Length: 618
Image 1 (tube, helix red, strand yellow):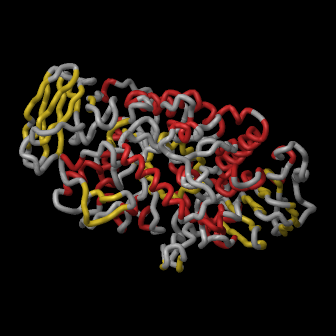
Image 2 (tube, one colour; image 1 turned 90 degrees about the vertical axis):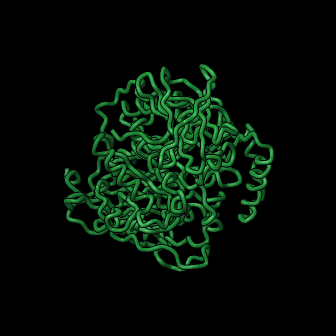
Image 3 (cartoon, rainbow, N blue to C red; image 1 turned 30 degrees about the vertical axis):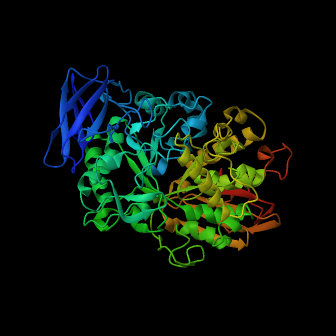
């Protein structure tokens, strides 16, 4: 086990307190519960202050007082039961009884990821309330949940990207033990747990880091203000603080991976890049623990270096979100999307996303007013995560509209097939699997009135450039949060059940068909039929089984000529079959073996999935 340097550590009936403050001469530990007492901490040569308290343990609450002046929560606090301004609380991680000893994680290419927001996923909005729903998710085929940030943030309502304590689990969600219970239960259900983490900035309210040390730098700017100091004076302690964090979540909470927010706004010109340090620390932890741990990047760079190993100059991420795939697909599903993504709109761009990855790979991009990106040809499909929706794509619309509120039922089914039949790892946003149509807004619950006003005005200004017809809802209002909660029970009947069954069928096909288990780009062909229609040809690694996926994204009838094949094509899934009709009326009859057919005509948006291989001769 890697020895903990950051924050507090329980040592039997003693607690070791550690805090980094290189420019401070003194540091005082101030206990507030179960007794009030102050202690002078001992400064070490590397800028850390330490103190070991006897007869102490979990539940002790405390502040730190730099130079004996004002007192502040621990920057490496693991629990803030009274919020971002309150006392920090000692957590004894050895006290939790794990029951996942046989869990070794899941291969990344096997994942069906499900992004969810803890506060709006259930009426209760807690970790504990998620547990009863795991069985249903697993039955759908989902085997990984990705939690939006759960670090301590101001108030009870927040997306999580205003968090200020990267080591602390949000109190309103249930705190440390309840998160562990969720992970425990998820692993029992065969579900991995990934956590969204933010290392590019810290939220404004409750941010006392500057009182301890130079955590920030003016050398770079981010959309949220000052950047994290990873390469300036005194940056060693900052690098230690953030690079130990992934290992902390891996070891203490048994998490299966992290999704890292906007890594392109994390700046480091050191000879050994910050992400290389993280990569090496995690490799050592994996070797000692024997469990997998995946690192997923959100990156705006369109650079293949993100997913290459540091040994060849990369950043070492397991995979990254493929935004280009979303943009290329969305504008074909929703014509209004072309106003939002002016550099997309051609079917050929979606085909390039299927075969190459990045659509913008060095071309001139109007939005950026410059050339952007590099080619990702040859990069395995296992290195990318694709989606139709995520918290950003929905929450950063003025009405918080999901795809189900923007396109019709046929196009929703088509969208699901677009990602599930891709050579990439698919991700759904909570409720997408049954066509949830409640909005998902941006919401906060700050206590600083001036900050609240800045957030409200900032959202209005942000939407001005999109020329929306209305103003965004006030993110501070509790109703904005409540309206964002999904209604889980919808999936039990009607069109919601049909959509859920459609997703389940696609996921089952993805998990069981050898052609969809092959992520080698050399075995993928995407062919343009006409503007708005294309075919996707997938082959198994041994070349013995094939899928031909016929996509029509247009209202006009499209005739697909089937390639000659030594075996008959069999239609195994057809989105326009009666079973999948929103109104339970047959639109087209399901075709089975197509031995006497050399073409298929699709009357409107839809997808046909044809199979040729071992079973088609039966």
